Amino acid sequence: MVTDATQPCFTQLCRLNHYRVNNVWDLAFKVLPLWQKHPLGYMLSSEQYKLLIMSLAGLKLAVLKLPRLVKTHGPCLTSCDDQLDKVVCLKCDQWLFQTQLWIRRPRTAWPSPKIISKIISCGVLFVPIGCKGSANENLE
Image 1 (cartoon, rainbow, N blue to C red):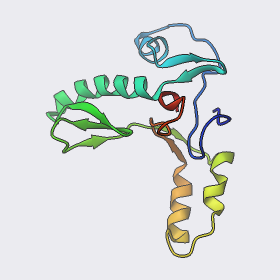
Image 2 (cartoon, helix red, strand yellow):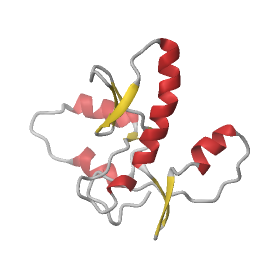
Image 3 (cartoon, rainbow, N blue to C red):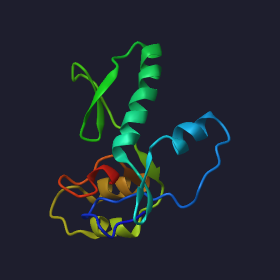
Image 4 (tube, one colour):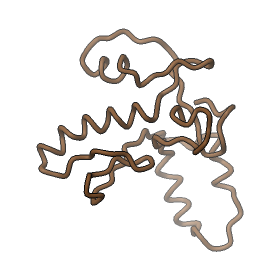
């Protein structure tokens, strides 16, 4: 995780090592242009991630006879009639150093301590969207 050149609440996910292609999933998730070369290493492209998930979701949704996700709306994949939004995220079970400010932020009423505790117990979710106007928006 690289946060040196990002706004608060945004990050870049960096690949730590090189992969060998062993099966179809390796091909789908490691060789396709999900990873873009950057001076700090290979970064996960939020735009390419959404496009890959959209293509995979289309296959599953067709089987379930649900509307096909055909466009992006922020971090969401959206049906053509705007009736269905889906966000696919990456989950980290631990709260990271960068998220501690949110936990300790002074609050007057909302959210309640009970809701904050519930949120913390769920971990951190990385959604594929960058900071608007950022030079690396598609890599955040």
